[in-house]
Image 1 (cartoon, rainbow, N blue to C red):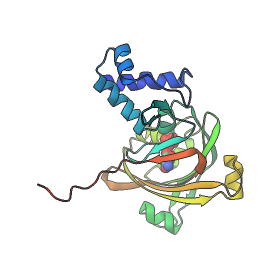
Image 2 (cartoon, rainbow, N blue to C red):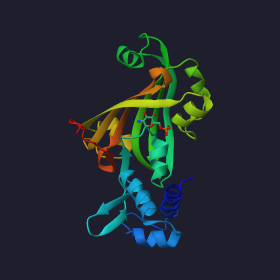
Image 3 (cartoon, rainbow, N blue to C red):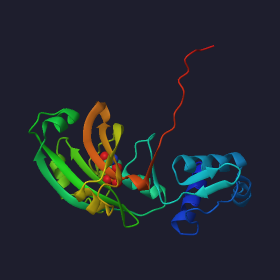
Image 4 (cartoon, protein in one colour):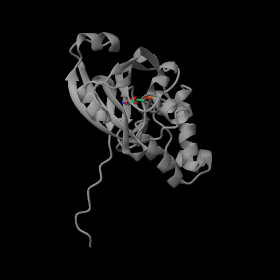
Length: 240
Ligand code: GLP
């Protein structure tokens, strides 16, 4: 494991164990490099990574702090809910609201490139971090043998984990849309927020190898608890 990776794990553990709390100032690069006998470059790389993942935030001239209770979902790497929450040192959990095989409607069928009416696995989950509801996710999955998902305990396992390790389906890429909105009565009750509070709707199509869509998921995230992070690079228009 590269050293900066090891340091990232150590720093995450300090949050997980409760030693560092949201808003705490973390030691400087110099202090970390002395404590762990690593170069300042390595310490900087680990901190920068954790800032990009939303675990820490920097304040100009003041230092680096443990992020407040907002969850950052980075929009760079394809990660699932369990990974995002664990990366922050929080405990992810899931309540399955429904799991059944249903015929695909026209819109979903188009996303999954199948014929409308084909049976797909439909999963509705409430996703929580440290017991606090954060999102409702409605996943539609289509692949050969997807009905076997009915036998999986998806309260105890991550969907991405099951697809990759049990079904041998590598998740390669995804397209995602974000849209601001207001919580309806039912969503608000599940998310324990006021009806009409701000939410963020996301729609994600995830592809396995050979560019095959495997999941189309619609989610509702509590607007006040989420930050979506993306890193933008300017395209090099002219080459010298
Ligand atoms: C994200 C995506 C969903 C996906 C989920 C998988 O939240 N929006 O489309 O189903 O991650 O998460 P997990 O692997 O924790 O089940």
